[in-house]
Length: 370
Length: 188
Image (tube, rainbow over the protein chains, first blue to last red):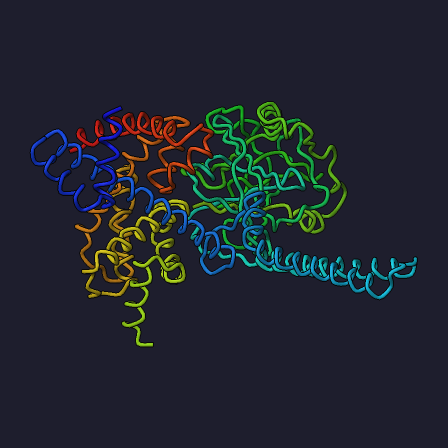
């Protein structure tokens, strides 16, 4: 009990809340009793530290708030909020406006009903109808306001700040219209930021959802509100191995534009007899990694992955049947992908090459990595 | 407005906790720091953290009152961020070429060291508060950080009277002080 009172005295002393006579008395006690003195010194330090923590916390949360606000308004180049966080932000930002609007609406309604009441003490059906129209008007106004907010939101969304310098990259292709991509794991290894860019130069943020180190396959998912789902994938992923000498072609991004290349299947095994991959003869450059290798029927038969440095035109692709096994693993690891289906058949059969490429090019992306 | 005067006003605003001033400084300097960090092997999140640390250093400087503005805020913030980021890179053992020098820098070693010392103490206290557990944590925070009175706290935490709350707070405080000073004395 005594300790508590002592502590209270020390706290009041530190805060300067003691009466002058009390203070003199306490200082006397401090001088004569080293324990008390020690307690005051220690507690002063403690209180100081607590104040610092309080102020720093406040400042940090203010900084975070400012950061979010500036980012949402596009005044700094930073990622915008997504999903729930965004709603919370918008609510915070507009809640005053919303409150004022609601108040005005409330006052209007009350005033109108009062007017109606005073003018016609015996309300008939017509007045009730009028009143409801007034309410309708309020409702309409609200819809307009909501639309304005939505437009604002869309405006915010359509600006993209490519402030991040992506240093390396490769290619990737969609296996699902909603934004699931296949690429090589070595393209996205050690990535901190990943973005994909389509043929027209639009950039979307993406993240890795699954990797298989041994097969060198990574599955990316577009994580960007601006990404619009694409219609059915034109190619399918072949489950069987391709035949020797079968003509093949690829699309990829060894440079900033999409590049077409064609060749043939040279061997059903890869470098030093690796059974995961196959050998193809095709012109490929850094940046082609992760791109699809397709046959005449428009079936993906592999993922272009590596080339032999010591020999010209010797390129290896991971066999497409392993895409299926990786997808099976993905479905096991994340139940939200259970319903994922890849196209059963290619819609490109019998088309000439130019048309095939035209159909495919929107589904092949540049993968940019930082 | 004279640019020097504007900078002085901004620092004054920052010291007084004016949100507008903080926002202006933030807006004017963030992109520069983000490109510094991202172009030197860092991520956007790391850039944000580094920049906010620099804002705290700047706040301390502005508050101390003896901050002679012998360089622009921009130069100062850049120098601090560069220093902190270099240190972090070393810590993580992450390879980077010498951090590019975009603008001239001013010596900030002492300021950064001072900040790190304070930050360490801050982390110690946060850690100590964090390991208190409930209801101690909220009780202590309500009294010492939000500085609310005992009456108020007693009713919110459901104590029958202020004295009961006071007793509980005392017990929590003793634990917290023990936790904090154990680390504090180790750190010294």
